[in-house]
Image (cartoon, rainbow, N blue to C red; front, side, top):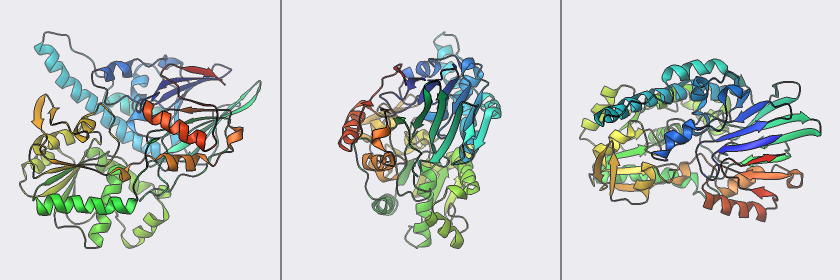
Length: 466
């Protein structure tokens, strides 16, 4: 068995790891898109490192675009194998990949206007909404904890990681002439205590381990502290300063968790009387998908649903779908809270809201998740005095806040606690992916201190025979 690391190697986005079996069956673990790398992004996404028509199967850990976002592109390039994932991941990909395709089409139209003005030829979008819809024909949904037989020599099993709705560790078992080989790929590891989702569960013993490291160098604050901080920022911005609070948030997972927290605060009579907008068509559709999968909810969430059948809705909460509705929010003068995608502030409607609010000191921006180093979100969080949005420069006068506790990624203690379901002596080699190099080096040391051995940090293009 050969494993090639083709993405999220010494960086956070673009997860792609190619497994080639002894019988030359080619299995891709995730097919993620690079995000937040400026002008390099498009070229890196188009340079796959493999021929799509030769891939037999894609095994998908979860629906986030940095893990799933190139599936329509490989479909466009000739991939016709199967995409194997959990049922909830399949449902989320239906809306997330179509949304991604629509964004690529819209961005390409704007880009080509600039190309035309310079007398340069137009470019094609990396894929379209139609490609995203068509590729869903290849998806196969599999229940958690069920072994799915790809063929006589190869089987896969998903166990819940608690990172997002439908996320799962992949256990790939391949029978070769020198014996059965068990490769575990964690995808992204969630939190031990999540407000909505069930916590990560142990996965079967593996021989070889590929694991993420996003927060390999830091610890999160307690969830209860995050709830109080969120309430404080809303009161400070909307009541004391009488301004607008913009919360850039990933449409799937983070937005639902924030809305659920606000719903609880509303039911307890603690939430100020301000209008709250979820301005993201994808977030609206994703919330509908959440309602379809209570099997992914933790006991607290299920108990809550007995007394409140809709934990994602309350008075003064408004979901917006149309562009006209989004524009009307920006025309408002009254204090309000705007939750909008994307979480890294790189695309989507949140950029328009930032353009309309960030220059005013009465307003605030609250980041609630990870922002890759070269994204707009990272620039705002590191204190840049000016930012560029859609080609226009804006001074950063709004107050900037950050709450890491809402992150869907476990910190290094939570990740190690999750991995401790394994007998370390039976793991022959461990590979750390999906993290910035400094965080990976720190995490490697934490793992070694905990008793893990034979740990490698592969760079992009590195391959190994197992």
